[in-house]
Length: 285
Ligand SMILES: [Zn+2]
Image (tube, rainbow, N blue to C red):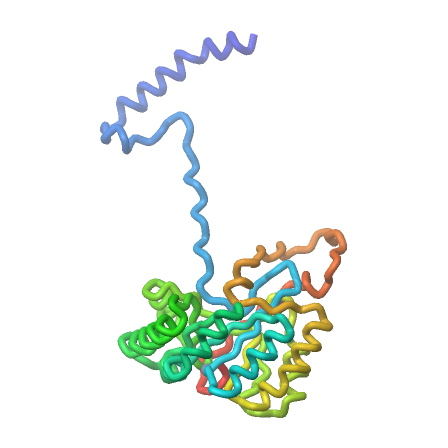
């Protein structure tokens, strides 16, 4: 019955199709709209993010980062401490220091750490011409490559100062991801090792990117206790690139029903979304 009705309708459909075709001003065959099934264009994938303040991860992983070195005495001391605790770190190096101490960079990479570009002379990139920024980054990229035999893939702007436009062209031209931070103990103000430790412990959660500087002696003094206590809390430090590789999608916003309890509550606490630090002249980063 149903089939017969369908068959009866067929000539009508064909007639309609023909009518539509006749009205068509005959565009080239390839451009003709498909009248039967309108294929949905595949969803355009959102481009991967360029900038990271923290990473949403399903595990107790964090990235410890150290800026402005390498320093002839403090960075090797820090490398000893990291090795003793089996922690990996990322060093955002100032190009002129990297050029002075290539052997320290070599050692860092040999021991599993990562090197990122932190400009040549630590200027406020957000206020500079593209050409000047390009020179700062290229010279540093060259110094790092000369030291460790491979190009860096991360950069951190001094003071966190960088415009959206700069992020985009720097990413396109150098392929860098732009790494900011979500934990800042303000160690450059030298508040004393115990304050540095307690600030880091208080603010760090799974997926955090922790900022410190390996050019201040009290920061290095703060690290044994910091590392001990991070370990006690179950945190594991990996390089920034490793942390980004672990990224998992953020959970959907409305929490309808509580999900199954997980083994490691520390690890699964979603990272609070924080605005990136405003471009300022403060010496953070
Ligand atoms: Zn810096």
